[in-house]
Length: 159
Image 1: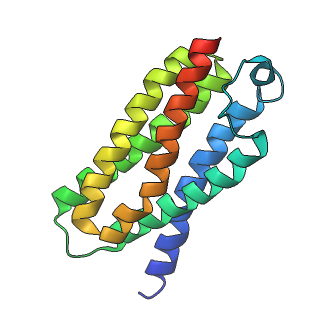
Image 2 (image 1 turned 30 degrees about the horizontal axis):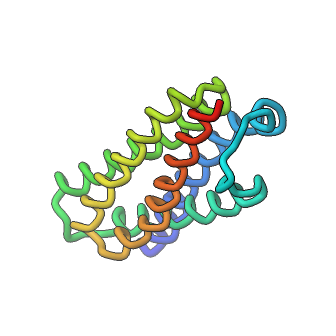
């Protein structure tokens, strides 16, 4: 059964990257049109920064998922709760792109990103019970989403 770990690795990374691809569908519909017309704060990064940052983040949270899924010493309940919160944060992640870019609604996106941030924290808490490395891999993600909260809020207020 040596094929299981490489397959689990590929599936875990793919799950995260697919979430990013789904979100990018909504983003691509308005990033060059509606988004360009918005007033943005001075701390708004250049557009080219977002794709590599998000790709990196999706890869590391996918690796984190792999570590949790590969652990064999954790109770079913803890692992199941961890994976539930992981799935929830990924859903809120995708939903943010739909709300902000797809529906062009920074207010609903702001509500969503607060829920995203909360679900990331809960994921981190449960991942830490299983793997310290999985927990640490989520730190850049929570930092970026924290920054995104301020950015989303600034865009909401300015527009």
